[in-house]
Length: 105
Image 1 (cartoon, rainbow, N blue to C red):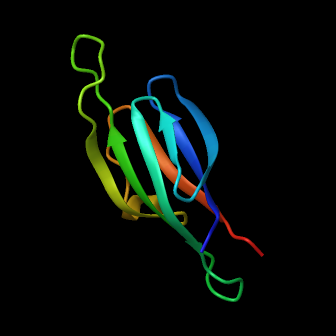
Image 2 (cartoon, one colour; image 1 turned 60 degrees about the vertical axis):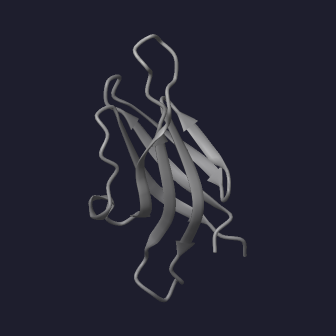
Image 3 (cartoon, one colour; image 1 turned 90 degrees about the horizontal axis):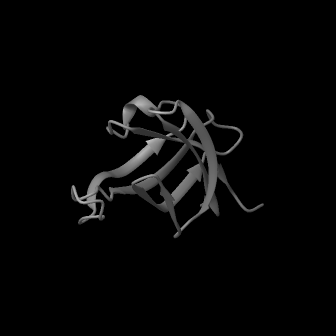
């Protein structure tokens, strides 16, 4: 089991990407998203390389008056580093990918 996960984010409006390292059990606030990192794994070196993480992502949308409304769960599941299209985040403004899992040696 990993200690932290490396995520890459894309803001589709500004076309900017950023990488974040988030410890297991902690959350990342990115734009209107709250990304909860629950678990990550990395296959052993003798196996086909794969990194995967269990994420729960909520969207804290504005209520039309500039205030944050009730957060809506928009993703809950495993994301795979080698093939993000298997289980993608479907959001109009943001994309999130798993890049790596930091494992204690």
